[in-house]
Image (cartoon, rainbow, N blue to C red; front, side, top):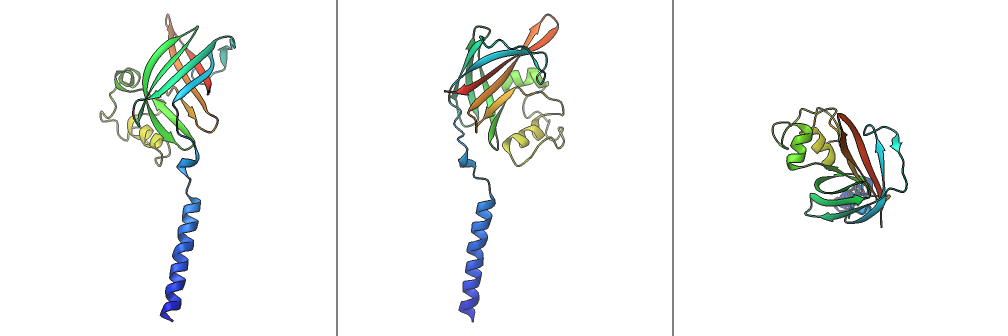
Length: 179
């Protein structure tokens, strides 16, 4: 009788492990390698989320992405309209990798250095089970802008550059596909 109960318990543990494992999202199923060359174009918008002001498809652009470490990337984005090299932090967000400014660029945009007492000021801004959700909740306030990221399923990268013309702000948006 003890052997029979032991086998039932063992079978239950095996089935439970299998079912639990099958329900978990496999982070390895999406290729998280962002390094490479992305070819696309620049467009211009009046806000981060607005319709395009200028959809010049002849404005070809390239972004070369190299990994500095597990958390940072260096991007050289260039074309006829812009040539910029910058470093971003990256955060896992399921099937995408989100990016955020760092160092002095972070302070200039958000008014504080990363980690300077902003923990929890954002409230429940995202899913805290992802690196991105934790970053948003710990470092940002409601309404903070973010400028891009990687769609890992489609192999694309998008980033918006804040451009000042006099007192008005436009955004030069890069959107490209990995070669």
